[in-house]
Image (cartoon, rainbow, N blue to C red):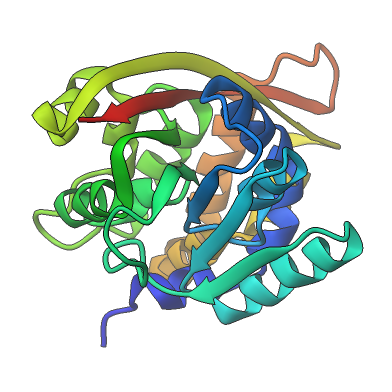
Length: 259
């Protein structure tokens, strides 16, 4: 039986991985920019990074994800910061919210993993006319895009499924949103990954990151080859100058205004 996307992302604990990319949601909220009082939706919120960023800025925030355990982590974090956020279970391809319910719809490394046509349509549907859409998406040429290419070579996706990193290509983004948006900017960004060594980074991903875990399971007897290939990705992008890992992960911010 094929593994569903929900099962993939429920494997491991993405909340641990998410602690290393908190800055992405903070920057996205400032790039929009969100305003106090805005009705904001964070799609595929995970453990709530971007939802928390918007709530810290005085927005009225809802976060949606299809992994209940991650929503519980998000609620714990919101409670710790005394922030009022509504977290609900739901899929980026069928968002459980009314049409035009939000002034701003955000997603950091979330909606990019949905089926592109449905994901884009749902994002547009729940955003009001004149509202803003903000996405953070990994690029094909960056460290994470290359990591996904490596894992896909050991665990190929179903026929016809497009790489998620295509959401990091400006021409593709413009084609997918088309004339449903009146303005669109694609802004290159980098996030820094740090770990004790490239090898320890891969072991961390094998412990906590669902797609990496599932790829190793699918690789079977070739799993050591996959581990070695991921270590090489870490080494290729490493800029530390010593034995530690300090690597730049390329992504883009997509900032759009719904027509």
